[in-house]
Image (cartoon, rainbow, N blue to C red; front, side, top):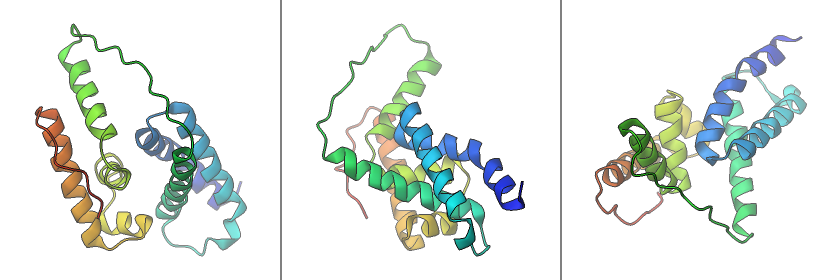
Length: 162
């Protein structure tokens, strides 16, 4: 196995974690990661060195944008939620965070997940998203404020994208 393929294989757990947090759907996330890997391996000759991690996250991010555009054209079905009032504090906090993340604008959620969950620098996130660092910082600040407001039970400000 080539060094490139070994490096790509080593990134699979991180890609899956990010995709699952981004899509909030295990099956969709696994499909997204698989599509990312297929694209990366088919395009191996186009990779000119540099940061493989950022390149893979860029592919995944772009595929997710395409997936979301496609889903936007379909009717939306909402699953029934089982809100158990007897849930433990940890479960309730986890649900609160999940709910707060779900209400974020896609661009803000992606930036928050890449910085907080994946530990990427603002510069890396800016390259992946194709935006200036200032936009990353703005999206991150708005995302954090929104999540904080939802968790504290406040009504979050109107969602906007920068």
